[in-house]
Image (cartoon, rainbow over all chains, first blue to last red):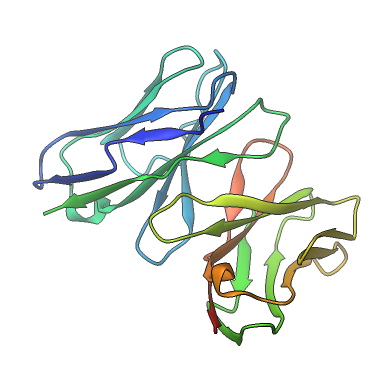
Length: 114
Length: 111
């Protein structure tokens, strides 16, 4: 079946602008994660959604970052007033449910803030 | 909180040789340890995982070992091929939802 998809694949924006990144998880997967990956570095947890429970936002680096999820489907990650340090690849992953640990990743969105 | 350290950061091997990547974790409550392979321009892909009640797991040319006492686990790739060239990440998870990733190892397999 279809995997996790993300859009856009690349985004270049000017400092101070807002951006929205989209993630479509695998159908039927109730758990969804967002990560940030800076160039040459590992994955940094940002936020976690599980079904209709309140999301865990403990990884969001500042109040400029927010995310929403519609039910158990699409999620959007919004970065307001972008800064150059926000430049990174933003990865989305989904898993079947909280008890299934295997995460399936999308291809990521490469964000460049100029 | 959990911390996962990964070594080496870069590894270069000759085709056909073995490659070993090592990780250590800090939280003894961690019970799930996946390994991901990330090719250029793609998201990470799960290649093998191990749970804390198992000491070793194999899948063809790939194996993972876990030493709970020492809190370290390793990825072993035998008979390496050029297509094994990628960045490999280890990770640890406690049983909640949060997975902590290592910094990655860039593996080069020279033909």
